[in-house]
Structure formats: structure tokens, C-alpha cells
Length: 276
Image (cartoon, rainbow, N blue to C red; front, side):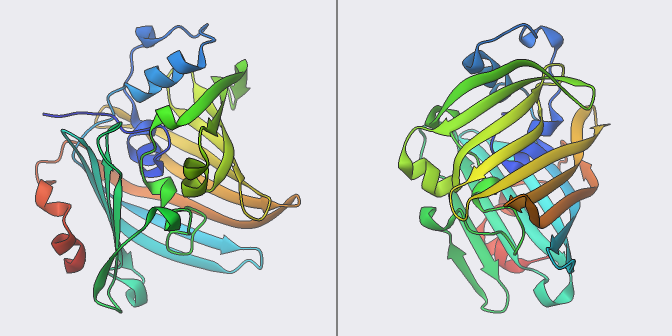
């Protein structure tokens, strides 16, 4: 069985693979000050395989208006990377809207994403130039939902020891090496607070290229599911000029790993078109 981990930057990976890492304490010394060694340890961990679950996504704007969407999710590893499927279950007016991502390992080939809109009855491939766009009107972008190659970023250690809600962490900075990567992600740079014990991010801060905004991500409700640490809640806030512009909360209803009914046929355009 293939059990490859996904990248540091994939939010579903953060939600159900990166923030779900069973790692031994000997994987890396908590005294390490080498940012590349830290990233390699995070990137090399076992992130579980053949997962499925349900997420409730709540979106709030600066006027207090709220939109709620329930998504079914599936993910699995394959020899060249990772595949992920999101399909909206509710509300009814957007039911069966779906996103399929196929993320390839380093250097294999460009990642692919397809969006299905039932109102148009058409699958559309998302171009690299469109990956910084909002996913389903949320504060997450399409790029947030894909894997980025760690080799596309320069990492520096900002702080060797910092406490986040009682969790001993490293604070790392990631800066895109080339403009193409900055445009695709939509971020000028990112700070990651990485748990030294679990080798997972507990929070992140993104400097958004457009609009002089900051995006904050908080990973919480760490729970062991099927023996795997899982962040069951992600809160994302977009701030401009010191004011919260919008917020998205992704709350896991349930998730399980190593599910035999998660199969390659779940990750095709035909399956995307079928909906729930």
C-alpha cells in the first residue's frame, strides 16, 4: 500500500494529511535550526492514505452574512502523487459542484485541477493563472487546495523556539523562488509555525499579493483518528488595514483513513460529473 505524504502547502493536506502525521520524536531534533532539515522532516512523514470524510465550511463576510456548505471529500496516494475529490452535498442550489485535484510529486509534471458546475453541466480545467482565485467563494484559493513543491521556495528560520497555545514550535518563512510560483499561489511570502512534537503546522500567516491583505490560518482540535493526528478545525481570516474582511471555518464532521472503498475510479472527470 502506498502511503506517501503530501506537501506542506496543500490545505486539504494540512486538514487531513499534514495535520495528521504520526511521526516519531526521533525524526528530527527539537533543537534543529536548519530550516531545510525541518521542512524535509515535515514533508517526509506518513500522512495516511485512502481517506474520506465530510467537512462543513462556514463563510462569513465583514457584514456578518454567513454561507454554509457541506462537502464530501476523498483522497488517496498513488505512485506519482496524490488525488483529492471535493463534492458539495448541501445546500441544494450548489449541490454536486465539485473539484478534482491531481497533485504530482516533485518534478513529475504540472498539477491538474478540474471544476464541475452542475448548472453548466461542464467540467472546466483550472489554469495555473486561475489558481489564486477563491474556492467556492471562501477564503481558500484553488492553490491552497493543491500541493506545492517545497523546492519552489526559499525557507529561513525566523525563530527557533516559539510557543503557540502551549505547543513548542519553529517559526519558518517561505518565499517563492520565482514570480511564476508567487502568481500561482497568490502569496508574496508565508510564515509557518511548526509543532516540534507532531511536525505539523499549527498556524500560518500569508502575505497576499493583491489588495495588501494578510491571511491567517489556525489549525485546532487536534484529535487522533484511526491512529493519525488530525486537525479537525481550520479557521481562515483575511485582514486588510487591521480589520477582518472575511472568515472561513472548515470543521470536520467525520473522517476515516485506509478505507478500501476509496479507489482510483473516484478521481476521474466522469466521477466528478456524477456528483453525490
